[in-house]
Each structure stands twice: as C-alpha cells, then as structure tokens.
Image 1 (cartoon, rainbow, N blue to C red):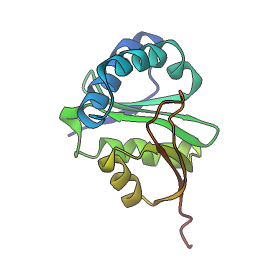
Image 2 (image 1 turned 180 degrees about the vertical axis):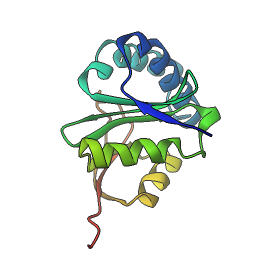
Image 3 (image 1 turned 60 degrees about the vertical axis):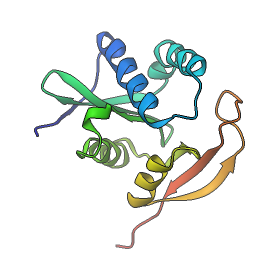
Image 4 (image 1 turned 180 degrees about the horizontal axis):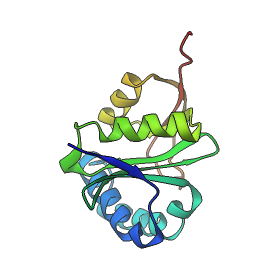
Amino acid sequence: MHLMLQTPHLSDYPELAQVWEDSVRATHDFLPDAYITLLREHVLGKYLDAVMLVCCRHGQRICGFAGVANGRVDMLFVAPQYRGQGVGKRLLRYAISELNAERLDVNEQNPQALGFYLHEGFEVIGRSETDGLGQPYPLLHMKLVPTAG
C-alpha cells in the first residue's frame, strides 16, 4: 500500500474530523456519545489549529493524521479500516524525527493505544485522574525512552 505523508490544508479539516470521530468511536468505547460530539466541536474549532499537522493519504483519502505542539504528540488518529497497516507507526515516527515530539498522553482506558506507544519506545512517566477538559477519563503521561547510540 502506497502511503503519502503531507501537511493537510484547511479544506481537509472536515475529513480530519471524520477520521478523528471514526477512530475514537472504534477505540474509545468508554466515552459517551454526547462527549464525543462535544470533543468533535473542539477538534474542528480549536485543536486542529493548535498543532502542527501531518496527514497520511492513501490515494485521495486521508487515512490518519497526527498533531504535534511543544514536543508533544497531542493527537494521533487512524481511520479504523487502516488500523494495523503501519499508518500510525509512520505518523508517530515522523512526529518524532521531523517535529521533535518526545512526549504524549494516552487515555488509560485505551489499552490498544497504550500498547502501541509502549511498543514504539515510550514509557509511562505519570498519570492524571482527568482528561484535558477535566472529565473523569484518566490520562497516562508518556515519554520517549532515549536509545543508546
């Protein structure tokens, strides 16, 4: 599968928000529907503009994207039909090598994402009881483990 990384345009935001929502619905089954709807508004209205974005395309379709700010991966989402095909790994490695990301937060209740980040060389360095909006969805704070060499 040929995947291309590029910087998305403002006109791509609706598609990015759809990838975000589809990904969240597939992996964050602990979030109520109303909260996902609220978060989607934040994604479109604030979050996408607050980060440096990179998206992964398969043909014309956006199959995943990442957003980085201040050395932290603030978002990394892959469309459900593209999970397990290297999209997240490509985006994460780009975020680390090109955007200098070395930290991230992951929902404690999302064991697949936690396992992915642990496999990709991150370790848990802390925990918060609430998410960024103060809701009771604990976050694990992770940092990239320096490699010898």
